[in-house]
Image (cartoon, rainbow, N blue to C red):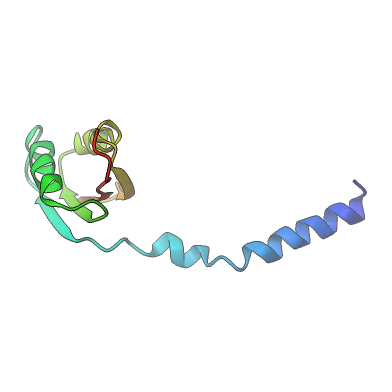
Length: 108
């Protein structure tokens, strides 16, 4: 590929990516159908309550989890992987930590 062709290809790619509003997609939080406030609770309580709350949701609904226990940084993503739910978003920079979990229709 000649440098002129490469330049045109790069321009084509950059123009096509401008159509995607990535700054909006990255900053918008999912809408939560329910919220689990596990602030102040310690392992294993947040995950135990997470099980109860997820059982209450229908497939396709989203649960927002607020937590202060550092073990939730490991436990919530592992919970999602193990049970097949989707961790749609997580905020782990500040306390309370926030997790948005989309309930799967296929529970393992």
